[in-house]
Image (cartoon, rainbow, N blue to C red):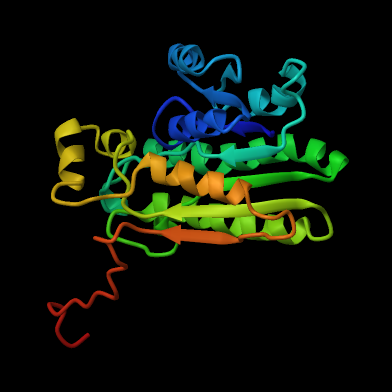
Length: 252
């Protein structure tokens, strides 16, 4: 069975992935900012979970992670870069630069730094699997997406380029890009309003964190010679919206 590092394991996708993989017999290093939630998760799932407090925006902590792991958890077979967030839905002119900085620090820099920290061990052993949670927002821009869409486009391009770098090794790399997905804190954090967050999913049947965990489990079970570069997934009630046309500008 594998030793798996999951970032952002305190809620949503990360929590569901951790629970699913432990049930399947894997060991999971569950990381996140909220120590108390990690400890509750470990108490629920047992000794197969190592709770590890980590803020991926802390560059020094990211670099120190591999050497600070205890025996039995140091050889990481699978890295799942899940930690990420969106903040705000306003147009660029109305957005807060501080929110942009937080998204970039988490979704871009944190993801890249964790990968850089874990990669040497995989290279040395010539085995491993790196997954990253992207988003359909990285492919289909939308009003108010601005920096969030940009960060998820970075995730996709970084991982595709990493795949090129890893050619000739036995290390796989996959981006999982979900669309509308409920059952997590994503919209609550983004909108800073639980009522508005609930409205995002009103009258829909969105994807769930368990669907993402199912996808991770399936990927891990594939033959070692097979690499899935990118998985895009949406609920049946969602589709890409097509191009928009403004008809108010007149002859310009």
